[in-house]
Every structure is written in C-alpha cells, then in structure tokens.
Length: 357
Image (cartoon, rainbow, N blue to C red; front, side, top):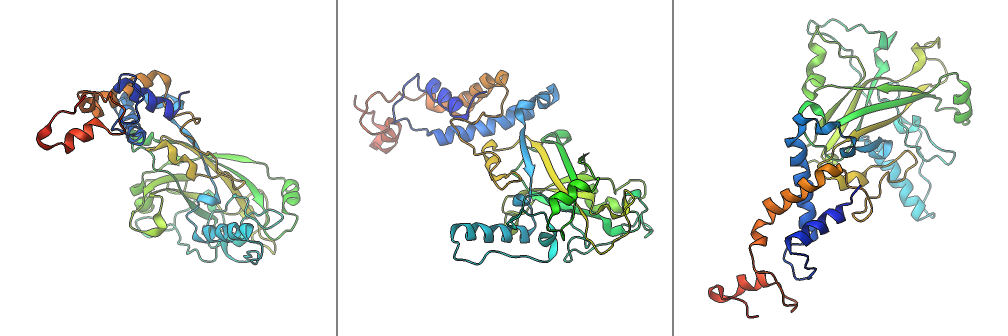
C-alpha cells in the first residue's frame, strides 16, 4: 500500500521536474486536498465498472459510545477525561438513564459497548407504538409482549462518499451479549447466563423510507436496519456532519429465550458495532474510537496506507497533474534559490516584467 505523502511527493516531483526547491508555489497541503478530491471522482467515474468491489477503498469503523450522538455519553466521557488529568476533581458518577445502564469497567468507566435506546433502557426516551397507515398496531415477532422492546442508537461518523446504491458504506454489523447493569459482578454472570455472542447483519434503508415507512402497510419496517444522514452544519450537536442511525434492534432478551417478563433484575442486550466506509477525506478516520477508549486509527500521512488500490494510483496522479497543475507546469521553473517564488514575483512586478536570472 502507498501512503498519502508518497502520492503527494510523487505529484510534486513530476510537476516540477524533480526539483525539490522550497520555493515552489503549490504546497503539499493543497496537493493532498486535490488527491482526496480526485480519488472521490475516480471512484465515482468507475463505479459501473465495479471499482467498489475493491476492498482497499474501504476503511473499517467501530461504532462505540465515544462516537454516540447520545449527549449524556459525551458528557460522561468528558468528565472522566477531566478527572484523569486532575485527580483532585471528584470522580464522575451516574446512576440513571441509558448511561447508568450501559456497560462499565470495575472503575466505572464506560467500556464503549452500548444499549439500544427505548424507555426500557432510557427513561428519557419516548416510545410510540408502530402503526400502519390505517392506525392499526403493527404486529411483529421481534417485540413479543411489549412494543418498547425495539430500540435504536445513532453514531457520528466521518462523511462517506455519496455513491450509487449506497456503496459508500457496507458491512454494518452488530454483535450482542446479555448485560445485567445492576450486578457488580456483571462479567461473570454474563458468562454464566447461557447467551452466546450473536452477529447481526443490518440492511440499509433509505432515510426517507426509514422515516415514513411506518405508514406503508406493504413493507415490514421492523427488521434491524441502518440509515445514513447528513446533519445540518449550523447545529452544534451535529458537529461531525454525518451519522448512522441503527433502528429496530432488541433492547432486552426478557421476551426471548425462555426468560420471564421484566422482573426485579434489569437485563439488556449490550452491543458492539462495526462498519466499512469509503470516506470523502480518509484522514478523518482518526475521529473514530474503539471499545476500549483509544483512537482506532491514529492517522499519519507518512505511514498510514492510503485507501486506494495500487492499480488506480497512476490514474489518480495523472488526474491531479493534468487537471489541477497544468497551469503551474506552463510557468518558468524557479531555478534560483533566493527565498522567493518566481511565480509570486511575476505577479508582483509592475507591467509583468520578467524575473532577472
């Protein structure tokens, strides 16, 4: 795999005939921006030729509470981060709501695993019975006994490429295990509970269908699914501009596997999620975290493999040079090392006088 720096330096060397002068007018930062842009164009132009079948384009993402749109999770993480930097502060505590029920380590830090949100797991959540266009309650085997047993959760992500057939995002998968939030020896009891890890592959539902499909009596709107949204940039809560909404996942196994209806002991499903995306800007992957509160990918232009298949690298380089740098290539090369860029001097000179050499 090739890195972003290797592509950028290759373009700069070709454009300037191998010169490494520090006086060249186009910065590496600008070249890298062009690389991201033309990578996106290259993928879009070749989508009908099956380019998205190449897994080198996709970057793995982990869906964890660190990237949850749940504001109480962000507040709890910020409080712990502040406490870790200054132990004279009081250790954060939480006893209610979805964060109070979420899985934690022995020192009460969030593990990153998450719960489906409904009024069963989150008292602040407002549930509504799913009804069809005629007002009839939708019956589904997923919610035996209680419509509140279908929940949802959303996660901020970097912005994916908007490609045909939603091919910019794929392999959205969940794993779930049983979770007893009231038990201090949660891990041991969960091992003995008899509930084994289960993988759930979600299907994509168009955002419009996800929002209004409840009223279509010809479609089943209760299967586990995900939708992708681009949030409004002028709202602080939508700081990352893109999020995945996962819907119709079970909140609790109380109505499944022979367990009784809700009793004295809380019991929920705890989830882990993963996805793969073709990102507009691959370097934004470093906004994602893993389940143990560490950045999943610490992006480095010099060492991190750039998500482009090697067979497309030459085409990408040629696109940047021919489209973006052709004007620069027509200018007189800066052969005098005087701490100034000759292109800039030409613009500043009166009457367009030529630079003395």
